[in-house]
Image (cartoon, rainbow, N blue to C red; front, side, top):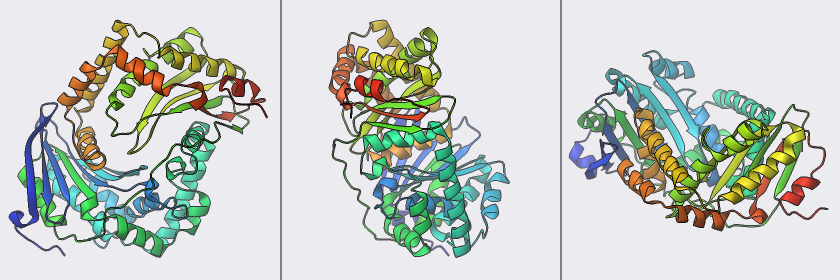
Length: 446
């Protein structure tokens, strides 16, 4: 099934000697354009094999919404070599491993984690799924129902639904603002021909990367990948996406539900993955809402007692981004909580004590270093950067960037991004009136 060729013929370039967190990683590009990243981690008892495809939900047209996610699901249904989903899962789980996949807005990701002696089988399973998935009509119909149930499950969860609503407010009328899974209507309309056409146009070697991290030698990785994937030829061009242009639209969505809590997301447009100051916003977010020592947790949970859990997160896409605060509160405390969150956001524009700045730096560096203990996280770190940014920052480089960020840098990014008229608010819960919320967001009452 696979054409065997020498390593020299399938390798066009090899870059060696890069380190991340004391871990040496190497990049090899095969003749067909497939990139291979390897990172040997001798002290672990695991190997992670990860396939990154440079396509996600933002590459879909309106009628295609949910196609990437659908393809990912059906790829687990069976191949020529492993005819059923159970055959696929048992190949990995039967040796104590883990197998999974995920679709995001800009990437599709398949991965498995096994002990070193089962590396070749793990690589074979992922390559088999990539190249030989059957896409049987019966499997497609069964998976269609599974995905529709997944969509229903997310909509039934107020905390997940409010996250999808805030995306609609941040990226109105754009694929970034849609649910990655699509809708019941679009998923119901997707057919086998559409799945295969989309896959054949987007899944190609030049748009794919395999990262192998853990206790395995580079030579063994390259020999295995060459055997499995060097004969894969698909000359389709790399896919393009619809660029996002900032636009005005709704800034408040309230979905009334009879729930015990009001679930909210308050968000601001952020900055892109390629923005030179994205780490400034990341560090600002650590101060704002990451962990139990953050300002939001200390003020809104510990001091005011308004929420059990509250946090903030940052998203960076290729040409856009966001800063979002998420919380669940008693409906009677909704207005008070939103007012307090807005106050904490505005306080970020003021002077930040050096002690708090040092703490944020240490939190950021410490969490990064701890994540690099796991082969799965190392694969994600290397593969995600290479696929999206085209360049891998080492852990040492990121630590240097973090150490170089000053209070004035955080104040500058806060003053640029945090403005009341840019804030978006989504709420799911038993909200009786939106007037107070509109006033806080400076939205004209109807």
